[in-house]
Length: 108
View 1 (cartoon, rainbow, N blue to C red):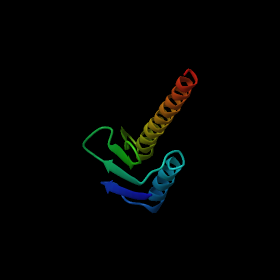
View 2: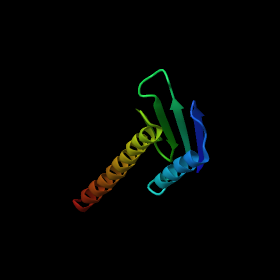
View 3: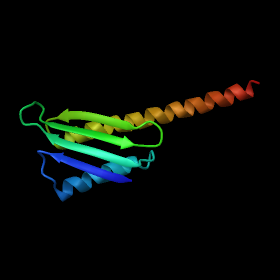
View 4: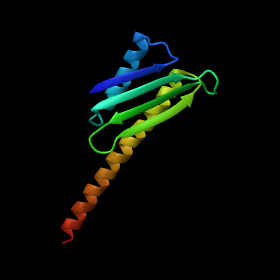
């Protein structure tokens, strides 16, 4: 997996970058991720000031999440929660489709 982290008005710290990397790699256990683009941004003139956008390039439809909050970790965790929900929703749709195909074949 290729990970790109973009910092806009946010200081790039090793601890922050490694935390982001760990969180995104944890998603890789649920779904194959070819590339992850993470944008961490602080807009001082807006409220809430911190914004996070995560784009995941995956086989099939790509996933993305966007969130804002008053702290960077809170905004990032909101975006990760959105991604986990999207992954779970797509996995459950796939299982339902497979189950319905099996029941349709048994009915023949």
